[in-house]
Structure formats: C-alpha cells, structure tokens
Image (tube, rainbow, N blue to C red; front, side):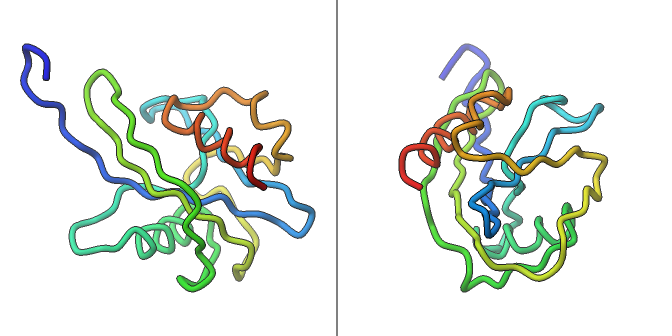
Length: 138
C-alpha cells in the first residue's frame, strides 16, 4: 500500500488463440485506450457474476467476432501484476477451436505470430510472462 491507499484490483481474463499452424493471435491496442500501441492477448474485464471462461467467450465475440466454446478453453497460466495505479489478476487460457474468422472490431490491429517471435512485439508488463510461458511450454 502506498500513501494514496490500496490500489484497485482489476480482474481480467485473456486467451491465446492458436491456429492450425501453431501461430498465436495478438492484438495491438488502438489509440485512445490505455497502453495504446502495445500488443496483447485478446480478452478483457471479468464482469460481476461472470466466470473467467464466460468473460473470454464474451470478449472474443465482441472484439474479434469469433465464437469459442467454453469447453475449448484450456487453463494455461495466470498473472498477478502491480501497475502504478492498479493491480491486475489475469487467468490465461489457450483455445485451438472456434467458429468464425478473427476481425478487428474495436480498431485494433491483429497479427498471427509464432511463439518464438512474441518477444519482438512490445507488450504490457502483465502480458510478458504469458508470452514467456507460451514460448517455453508450447
């Protein structure tokens, strides 16, 4: 805790979509959003009453127009990271099966990236250990 009091804790869920060639989908945060220009794994805030899996399904539908089934989400890792103004807790899933083709619905840029190339993309601090886990464990 600092002099300003406790930091709010933000609960989010994210997912690595893996295509048939083993590439991972990442998205570049658009201008006007916090951390604009950085690349991240798709996902977002967990709403009250929502499970992390439900949040990932909803976010992928909203952000990318893809429809994963909850059963196709495989827990992979999680992050607990302190930013200057908040703390983030993020369960991270893998998904290899979904319906639809990813579309950038929120002005983001999309890239399919091999795991070895993830370190070439600037990412938020909370996503860096997830990228390392993908490189090391896939």
